Length: 311
Image 1 (cartoon, helix red, strand yellow):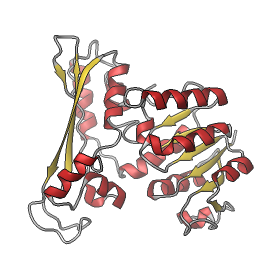
Image 2 (cartoon, rainbow, N blue to C red; image 1 turned 120 degrees about the vertical axis):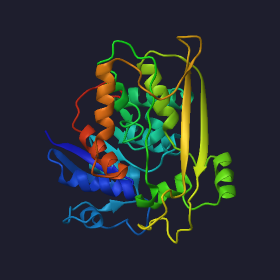
Image 3 (cartoon, helix red, strand yellow; image 1 turned 90 degrees about the vertical axis):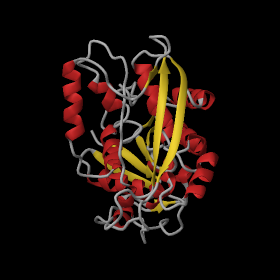
Image 4 (tube, rainbow, N blue to C red; image 1 turned 90 degrees about the horizontal axis):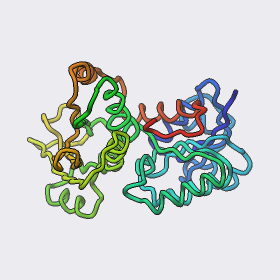
């Protein structure tokens, strides 16, 4: 069975998703949407660096969805659910399922319950699924830790540590984590929400819900890690030991034992701890951008009618 897909959003992540989709067996790319005038009218294959695909990038989402009639839309336009809600509603109304990189869509029920309910109702009316997924949230800091609890007879706490070298990542991610800012600029952007790890609260609540925990509170702290010497460029390979980036630690308080705070750490039986050590030693040969694209394209082949990141 060939699944017809439209690629919606052709930024750095969207380009990677489109490239994978064009070469994936069982997936046929039938349309592409982006608002960038430099991309509209170009062949998608040429744009992503493969052979001509015969798919021309359009700036008209409604027309593309109506003409292409996709089964699934691979959506990669924004991290903020409020910004993409109208797009998601439009896609659902067109009768297509959505697999999106929008971090806040991964588990919106706690942080944005009203918007989540509205999108859920729209999806149910259309008989489609809206799924937000990627490396994080969607895998590294929620789905994977949940899977690692499988050998545990009981789980008393979970701790997840993720280290990202922003020097080798795309510009938008560097700006999100505040790379290259002065301490004063960093603090100002933290206060306005411009510097943050989008999707981290969603991972926390997804973990707690699937483990059957009720969180009494959530503490979220963001602190800068300062460079030890001046670097001419954030992408410079010969850089100081610690390039400027942010360190964020969410903590959920779980109420099963007198309200003791539960950080992201697995504390379970020996078999589980051994699994954790092995997982920590593993090395993945690509950055989150490529891994996110791989996850989205592979999800397209799933046939479950109740498809959510955590199950």
